[in-house]
Length: 167
Image 1 (cartoon, rainbow, N blue to C red):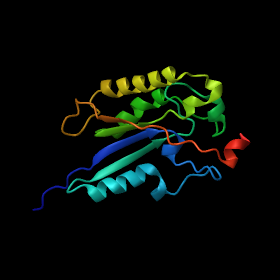
Image 2 (cartoon, rainbow, N blue to C red):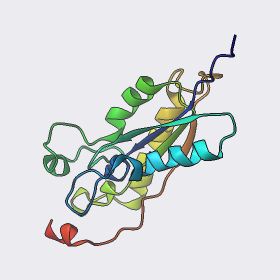
Image 3 (cartoon, rainbow, N blue to C red):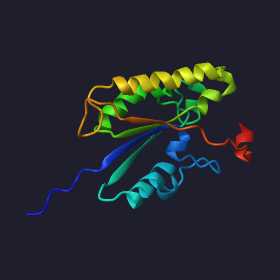
């Protein structure tokens, strides 16, 4: 009889359009293999010895740390909340057990019409980190009572594109 396969470790990539794979040249989604969460999974599985990894892409266009952005949502159909906080707990409990949560937000909080200071944006990150730490039984398989590791990912370098100038 063979030993049961070990369950893969889980990385929840919780972010905005960069996590979703928004293609700035036309607005469609980048191909699966080029989106950063899937590239991360490929790299982890190449380097891991005997331990499989899976990443979960939970990206949403216009997502902010805390605020709803009706203007940003309208560009994508206005059928969802842009507040990261409003969707985080559902995502944590939907995908548990979770070993690592990567928070990849902050770009949309910098929109001038939201009028947020750097301190307010940082407070949004602190609140989501607190929420992850207080989520019940969402941690790793071996210790679900412990919170997952948290990685705070900085926004990428912003580049002005022709499409960005149209808005």
